[in-house]
Figure 1 (cartoon, rainbow, N blue to C red):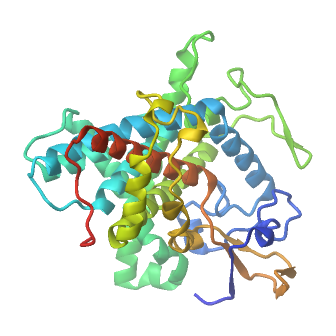
Figure 2 (figure 1 turned 180 degrees about the horizontal axis):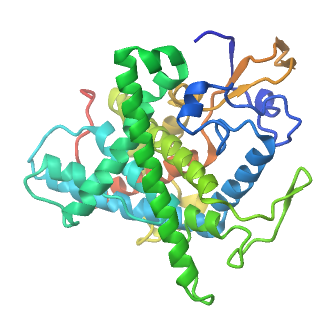
Length: 401
C-alpha cells in the first residue's frame, strides 16, 4: 500500500501527464497487479492497459465516440428526460408529504446509473424506478421484470467497486488460501463474470441489430454503436493514424466490453458523488443558497427555449460562480484516486524530482463527467426557477443534511 504519491492540481504541471504520445513518461496508469489480472482488467481497455498500441487503439475510438456532436446532443436529451422522471418520483414521495427525508446520495447514484447506461448502450435502465418502488406503495409504470433486472445489474457494479481494494491491496496468498478472504474473493470473481456475461449479451444483441438494419437507416447515437461500427462499412469516420499506427481494424467484443466496463465503473461514482457534495454545500451554507436563489430570480426566461432549457444561447445560462468555484477542493478529492499515472522513468515536474515507479495523481474532473455534471446542475436550477416563478411548492433544502 506504500509508495510515493504526488498530487498535481495546477494546469501548467499536468500538461505532460495528459500527452497521448507513447513516449510520454506518465503513460502507465497502474503498476502490474495480479489481482486486476485475475479480474480480467489488466492489459485491456484504458485504465490498466500497459500495451501502448492497444491503449492508443482503444483511446482513439473511445474519444471518437464521446466527442461526436450527435452523442453530445443525445447526452442533453437523456439528461432532460431522466431528470424529468426523477422529478416525478420526488413529487410523488416528498411534495405530497408521504415522506419528509430525501436520501440524496441514493437517488443521485441511481440517476447517474440510468444516465451512463443510456449514453453508453442506448438502452434504458430502471434503477430510479426500482428505488421508487421500494420507497412507495405506489409502483412505477415500468414492467417489474425490467426494473428488477436493471437493479441487479447495477448492484453488481456497485459490489465490484466496493470489493476492488481486495484485489489491489490484499496479497494473492490471502485471497487464494485464507478462508475469509477466499470466500469474498470467489464471490467477486463470480460477480464480475456475471457483469461480463451481461455486457457481452448487450454487445452481441446490438451487433445483430446493426447487421439486419438497412444501410439507409440511421443508427442510434450511443457509445456502443459507435464502437461496434468503427472501421466497418457503417462507420461515418475515416481511418486515422495514431503515432504512425493505422487504426483500420474493427474492435472485437472483448475490447468493446472492456471500454463499457470502465465507463460504467468510472462515470456513475463521479457524477453522483459530486452532485451530492454540491447539494450538501448549498444546504450547509445559507449565503451560497441565497446567492443562487437571487441569480435564479434574475434569470431572463425569455432567452431560453421553454421545452429544452439546455438548447439555448450561452448568455442565458446560469453560471452561479459560488457553486462552481467554492466546492472545488471537494471535487478534486473525489477525483484523486481515479486518475493516477505511474512514471516509467525518472522525471522532473513542478521543480520536483520524481523517481521511476512513483504515482502521480491529477486532482481534476474528467471531461465527459464534468460536462454531464454541469448539464444536470443547469437543469436543476432551471426547474427551480420555473417553480419559483409560478409559486409552486418546492422541496426544502435545509442545513440538517
